[in-house]
Image (cartoon, rainbow, N blue to C red; front, side, top):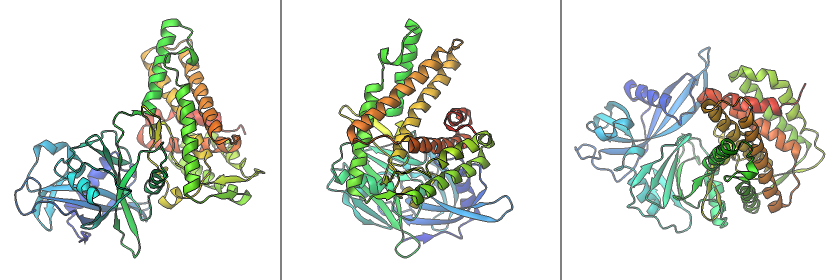
Length: 484
């Protein structure tokens, strides 16, 4: 049964607020907010919370927060998923995962820990995925007939960002969406469609979990279970390794270029481009498409300009390039050719790819986390994904260059030159792979506009999360913005 804890003690709300403020996956950093309601979802299979058994009670708490404007007026709300393990005493081995200690209206004083760090709690999710169907307040859906080892031990992944991922054994990975919004999550929709289509460039979806929303017919999708590719290598890490090899070769010979380096990445970039094209082709088969004319392209340009306006409030340094960026966005208004729109990845970069011994895999189809859920489900041009990957090659090169220059002085600018060569070589290789696989001519205007839009997003993200990296997207914007 779902229980609303809207009147729960201030202590619980205060401690949940403090937990959210310091959680890496919390998207409201830097904004004033209050916890206004906590909705508890039962997860059956736990021990009696009135006993001193090691596992007292496991729940999913849906925490509603309300932001406040500078003048004190109420702004929008967000809901965050906080799975908790409740204990009747302190658990020393989980001190790192302590969320708080408070008086629970059902149990009394409890120690609440993040359940994703609790090896006694996570099997409840895995077992529910293994059987499917309704489990307490939660509904577990399965895709096909996956073989799930329900006895596998869990390991939480340390590189969590907007979500939290837990690996079970060697076969499966559960990703919990921390910020939840009513509606159908594109990560579930798209991964399910690609799995059912047999596309080899996606980690297969085993199932997802959801719960009814507060309104009639509303659904909150809370997480997925999918294939875990234990031996796969992260695309971002591979790119950085290639750059380190290049710099090492430069140090050894003084004249090495990317095509001469033992770690040349162009072949992989080419194969990745073909993989993205194949993914786009499968999405065309699985979902509707539409043709955009002047009206739709005008709305696209307006949306990009609106995001720029919002970014200017966060990063004043953008003001010097605002007119040039608006010129780039306005350039797509007058395109005299139709543009095909379809379902896309929406937030594609090297960190959303994995290289297996067989091929490239593409993961995380949620789209940009900062955008509303319904906006992330809209049809878009595949050039958004292409532009995102091109930005990623440039980002990897610039970040590695900064790291290298901090370690070794680059008085002659050799490292900077080689980094730019590497980025250019791999962008071209990616585009060749994409074009050869799909047979489509490049749309330079749209690619540039999408790349500039992506750079604006990156500026805001870095300003809020990694200020030391802010100069990377700012440098890209200076290049992408048209002179005024």
